[in-house]
Length: 131
Length: 372
Image (spheres, each protein chain N blue to C red):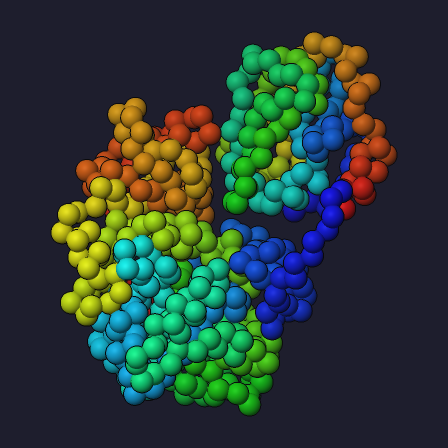
């Protein structure tokens, strides 16, 4: 499993999801905290490319040996790419939640929503308050 | 935040060892238990290919003693207690008058008039009270002795070879027990009840011993190369082996016949519930507990609905991703006519219908045992 880390070039959602915004597209994933809370991920049920996701709404499911967790969209838009490799090796989400463990790429429908997400410092503060 | 009501979970004699081994500890049936250490899959595979050790000290024990101890147990337990030979072991269920299952239990015969019954942690207080209450009229007593024992399960193809180094004397064969002194390598000084039983589908032993002697045995097992394994791996292992989990796969609302435990019921002994069990056997159950495997992706979970030809057909009672089979597996109650292995079903996994097939027991067959 990866060491605890929170890259500072990402935006964070309080449900422990991250977004990496590049122009009008963004990559979504789950944070180190989320994968640690889940434990060993054994199944990723990917959404369909072309589906619309809504900020704060669930768009996929991740299962560990004991638990199922919804994944929440940090931003709204249309899914343009899905990380198909995760279906064969879902443990990538534990090993590398920020790069190889990305979940979907999304064409954003409202870039202004990014202002509602947390910076890395705000997210770390939130984690401290949860502990 | 609301008012905090602290309910102290009990800790086993091995709590410090679990913390040291990096366990994730969770509340379980009133105990603070290790759910996993390094990881569920690694622990599961260690038990299938080498040797794992589980702290199962949360399990309860009831001692039944006295000249009429066999008669008392014959009244309480569903199986034929007179068939337990000296130093033997037997699996049975404890039933209510209406046949509802109170618990499933292993009973060890320590002497002609002395038995030890191991209970599920969540049921232990209920079982101990039930057994003591029904001792009236018998020249025997059933005593709660849970505090006298820690319990370790040492399981896997290498378990006997490894455990054999830590006791003085020969380990008991399957379904038998032996009282053996701990070897100096395991701290010495105490005797343990070593039982050729387990809950993983692998060979191995379960060891009951005084709590104060448990840490030295645990340390010696780890030093010999046993992998500490938690409750999560215990659950995936038992499900691959199709062993029932009380509370999931049966409870007081189910009788042993529909739960597939008719084979541990000998109604001729007149145990409490025997008439109801005989009637259930005669009538044939409306539903049966069956093992199944998904034929595609997905992981079934407890509570998922089972469908046959698009119609409701039952409910999943246990489900997981099998680490050895690498597919979703589980157990479910289905209408009796759907219980044949090979029957095609669907499982509604949170809105997605996943194709499944009824399988025969066990889902994962044990590899050929090594010679003693």
